[in-house]
Every structure is written in structure tokens, then in C-alpha cells.
Amino acid sequence: MKVYKFGGASVRDTAGIRNLEHIVRLEGASDLMVVISAMGKTTNALERVVDHLVAGHEDEAMQEWIAVIDSHVAIMRELGLQPGVDVRLQGEIPFDPARPYDENYDQIVSLGEIMSTQIIAVYLLHQGLSVEWWNMPRLLRTNDCWREAVVDTLTSAATIRAGWERKDRPSVVVTQGFIGGTADGRRTTLGREGSDYTAALLGNFLDAESVTIWKDVPGILNADPRLVEDTVLIPELRYHDAVELSYSGAQIIHPKTIRPLENKRIPLYVKPFGDPTAAGSRIHADAVGPINVPVYIWRKNQVLITVRPLDFSFVLEESLNRLFEIVHRHRLKVSLIQASAVTISVSVDHTRYVDEALDELREQFRVNYNDGLSLLTIRGTTPEILHRESAGRNILLSQTTRRTARLLIQE
Ligand code: ASP
Ligand code: MG
Image (cartoon, rainbow, N blue to C red; front, side, top):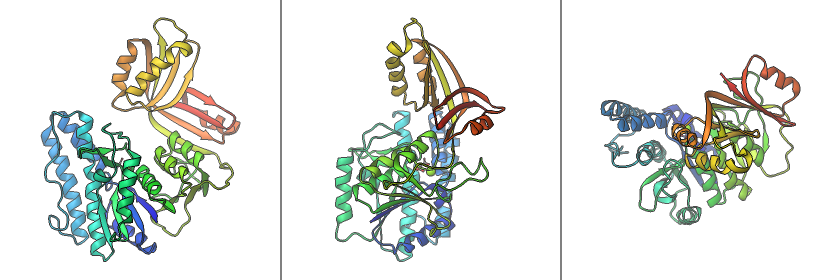
């Protein structure tokens, strides 16, 4: 069997959905698990619905919600489906002011994937394919760490394997990436852009021959084509190269995707949605040399936090634990660490939890911070490249090893 994953950009309109059908048919439409994200920018729109509701702006929330529903209804009509008959969309927003923000978030934001997969499954069925829709909130068991739920792999693998091995299973299964569910039936999400991770887990559970991520780029490139001209395709990568690239901020695959695949040595393909027979990039375990072109990776929206213990203790001996305990508890994602005898600096993604963490840090440390930063990682750097990339930039912190340079830049 194979796993195919289609991201939001690939299914943002009916042309995309028809192209998905074409790709599924190329594979002979057999023994395929198709994992799909929410359509286009639906996840962002649903996040805004949550924010408006929490802020008490019900009218704005309603407008945003109706726009989401209307766009799905329009796509159904264009596909020849009957809204309310072929697919019944959620009527009310599942919001409960008594619940914590993050729990409401998961109940609402997860609907993007539910809607996209319901519509696409019914469409494929109407096109004559043998298809079944699977509801991950009932199959992929997680804890209730809202917005970053942890998958119970043993329970989930058993349930999903049993479903897959059913004698009457149709040849194509369509299901959601990014979402799961608790034992008591509440929906959870696995972290933004988490559909790749779902695809990898399903590949692992079902011992897939391969997992393919269909994207709107030719494969894994050495830089973001929106920022750099003359990018080149990296045809083959080792698993650990892929982990490093995604962790540095290359938004090509979710950082958690590799481990479930590496465990079972399942190859991962990243292929262009618009040109399905192109080779794309292949990430696998067989002998491949290191990447032989410089790779530029931007991780945007960083905050640099520098702390100095109030009690003049030696920072590396006595404060590391305290610092990272706070960082971890507030779910900050660390992208870079640097220490001197008396200070530690960490750069983290700018999330809504940063302010709370800063307040808590101030109780124990003198804290400085800068926001609006970008972290540029250059793998395979040379003195010339470093010189060129540093020129004219306001660099707050830099780290270089023999082959890798990391620059934290104020833009
Ligand atoms: N729809 C989710 C997001 O936009 C998950 C994903 O696309 O992988 O973050
Ligand atoms: Mg997405």
C-alpha cells in the first residue's frame, strides 16, 4: 500500500480536487491511503473564528464562519455535489466559553479537515472510484494536550490496521491529516502543518511501501523559490538531512514526519502536484552522500530572549534547568541557543505563549528580548557565502560551525 498526502494548496479549488483524482487514478486507485489537509487557507480562517469568539466578537466570528461554509458550498456545487444531501456541513460553531482556549481551538479548527475530506471522498465516489471516508478523531487516539496532542501509537496502530485489513475495505481510503481524538471522543489537533506527520504515522502503522507528499513545488529545493532565484532541486536526501532542514525552518515537511518513516525505512517522496510523473525528491535510508549544494533556510517570526540570573549564579551550572523548564512548560519552540558565562540566549518562534513565559522568566532573571527576527541557516556555507549573506544586515547573533552558519537577523 502507499500513502499520499495532499496539502491545503493542492485542494484549494475544484481544479486541484480534479487533479487529485487524476493522481489517484495514475496509481490505479488501489491500496491507497489519501491524507488531506483543510482546503486553501481554511485553517487560518477557523483560527480567526476562535479568536473572535474568545474576544467576544460574535458578529465577526459569524461572518468569518459563514465565509468558510460558503466557500465549501461553492466548491461542492462546482463539483456537481448537492450541499446538504451529499455532504452535510457542520451547522453550528462548536464553541463553549467554559472550555479553555486551546480546547475550543481544537474543536473548531479541526473542522477544516473534516469538511475537505468529506467533500473529496464523496466526489471521488461519484466519479466511480471505490472509496471510504475515515474519521481520524475516532481512529487516531491522542491525549488531551490540545493543539499539540500526543498520539497513542499502540492503540491507534491497532485500530487503523484492523480497519485497513477488513475484507470489504474499498481500495481507496480518504482521511484527515492533522487531527485525532481523545478516548472520550473530543477532537484534537497535532500542531500546525501536522498533516505530513499523520501521513507518516499511517505509513508506519500500515507498513507502507512509500509515503508521498504532493506539493506545489518541484520537490525539496535548496532555498525558498519565493525568496531566492536559481534554486536547485535536491533529488535525494538522507533522513537526518530532512530532519535538519525541516527543523531549521524549511517549510517543506513537518519536522515530526521523519521518525515514523525512518523507524521502518519507508521512503518519503516530495513531488509536484502539477506534474505527477516528475521524480521530485526522495528521502530514504540507502547510501546517499551529503547534499552538495549550499542550502538556505529561513525561519521567520523569531524572538530572541536573553536572560541573566538575578542572583549572579553561574548561568550554565545553575540556571539552565530553570530556564528550560519555563520554556518547555509554555510550549516555546527553541530554534537556537547560545550562552556566555553570565547570560543565556534562546531564540524561539513567536507564538501566543511568549508573553506569559517572559513574565515568568522575569521573576528569576533579568530579561532582554527582541522580536521580529528571522533565523537564516546556511548549510554547506563557505567564507564567501557568509560574507555575502551578512553584508548590510543587522545580525543580532551568529553561530558558525565548519559547514553550517546560523544568523539571527533583525529585518
Ligand atoms: N490544515 C492544517 C494547517 O494548515 C494542517 C496542515 O495543513 O498540515 O496547519
Ligand atoms: Mg496547510
